Image (cartoon, rainbow, N blue to C red; front, side, top):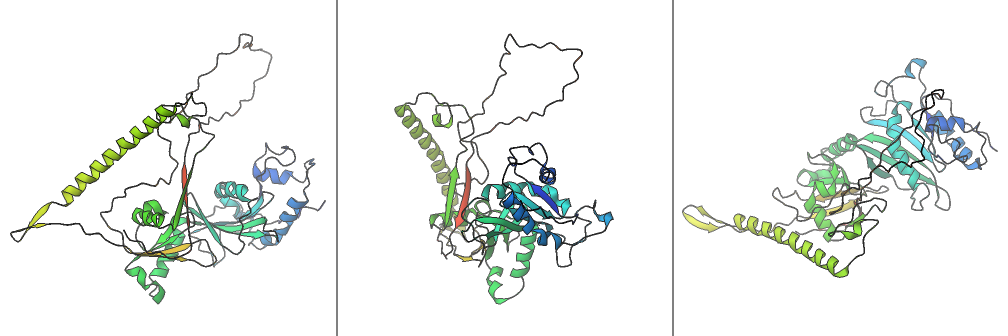
Length: 403
């Protein structure tokens, strides 16, 4: 059994996010204490791989600066970072191993590791690993840039990454587009967007805040979907519960006996009802926009001319980012279809209300006066709902969209 060799740098923190290791013996402990208790635990698991991966990041952990004892309890804002680090935007740097052991610097950024740990724990056994690509993810206004370390069989051994504040990418992109160089001159007359593989606009040459492409520029998003450059996916949380209803009898895990005729009639009625009001709205709005107007004593009929917007897609080499150069958006554009980017509750789905069961008659509720007080248990209420999500993938080729 190899010996666990970790760094003595007090500003590097080790985590063990696996709860099932050593037959769940370390589960009651928090992740940082769980790692400290691992060497002394009576564990029947084979720990050669976790120890080997942890020892491999010793050099990385020792490379970070050490400070005096007074800085141990300092906040991240007061911690002196290397001179090349933009302290205004930097959060932390981390290494996440296949065995769910990770280390990060500095230790004061512990609160930022929960989201990225959950993400990498789920993806650690995946086969779609590209060690030559710098990948990007957005978590709660934090940009996570990371790269995979793989073996010869493309199995992910570890992930090394850095977390930045959301405004960092926008500040960099603004400096590039306003630098006056030839390759960025078009961004003065057009909109240039820096988009992730999941369709999130990290930065742009506009004054708008970063956000999902479907909300940032719905006209461009609809055109990319129509031309097959963007693919949308949606799925339903099968673990959620909702009451069965006539409009959505399939939305409950315990539905009543379905009737094909009733279901078909209800679906057709719902579709006709929705399309009727949508068509009526566009009919009235287009009628008002097409009214005649007086100009110089002459009655002229104002016709709405179709406007074309041209866009080109440029993949950023060795990353999962894409630059989209597109004509400026039409100010009066109204999206005909909305693409939800946040979880939505299915129509006709209501939360199930649970009632307390009547306690059995043989249940003893008397209290023994000689018995000591019982430690209170932590009870967490959890109510799930059926929620679809939408993700998108941008294909690496150019397109010209016409609306």
